Length: 441
Image 1 (cartoon, one colour):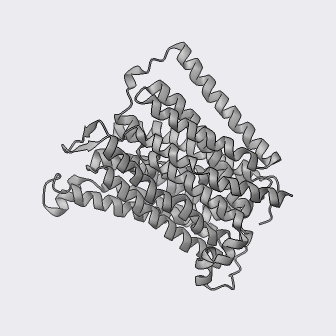
Image 2 (cartoon, one colour):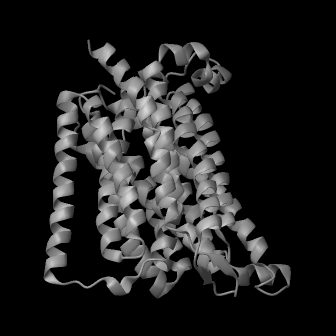
Image 3 (spheres, helix red, strand yellow):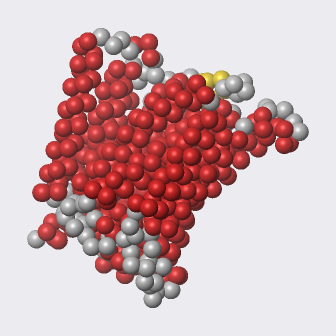
């Protein structure tokens, strides 16, 4: 597929469709699966940490294997569309997982079946992650690299970066409300059906970005390409971008898996009084943030991404510190969270665009697995465990789930811990900016 500076309407529609539905599925998996395990199944923060870690390992291995396979056979469409269809089926399977159903199978009580149900949820989450990573992380992301060029990647990444935010809002409002009214099983079936339908639509709407000519390299060579010292040395800017992404993602994973639990059980909603001044302030803050976000995205395509790295990191870290000091006050929490999320969105856009810019065009599929090591595996192994340890030390409140088990509510200190880790990003960013300047000159 020939690359153009301006993306066609059909490409944009497919980016929006598959990008959005993928992010909706991931948002449910990353947030509501944790809440589902915590509230409905009877799991605790350690179970959440184990589930996040297990799914991250599966995500990386899957992306490394399937991304390399898509490069080897030089096809993307079959992995995207087929993957989305089966991905939806695996989401629907969660509708049938409960301690009550497990108790019937085991011939015991629901309370005695909790541990087994937790294990089943974690295993099914890994199976679902396999399909999601095949279709979205490996094939769709490689397809995006195939169809874009450095002149339109920041804009493309801005679209992709806004989709998780929109997806989170939709998921929070729709999935949260619907799960409360109809229950988790109905929501899992509905979401899974929509994801599968998306894959079916793609069979008719997506054009393969590859020509279908098989690579001459062996599959082992494709799998190990990104680990070779010579490749790392010759692509220094790429790996500095990946290290920066790794630090950023570790900081994000310290609080993101527990965000909904924190809001649900720690934030004091009684302080929220929707007076006219409060509404006007919220509109002004959000409107100003969106305007600043759009301005920086447009300017980054014109002036380059390097000048916007430090300001983005500063917003992210400052916002997290402010969230910590907001404590349980919903208004201050919301205002601080907007600052953190603007910084989060900008930093994610700049780093993802940099990674695509520095990725060798004929190796996009093979390097998706390397990207996942830094953006998913290490962050999901390290971040939630840091959060669990922080909560064990600083938690001041507990929640009794419906099975009578007392579990710790995540402490606000997780945001301070995330900010401390986020500060470390200035080290690789310093060297990345130097490499960028060398290339530009």
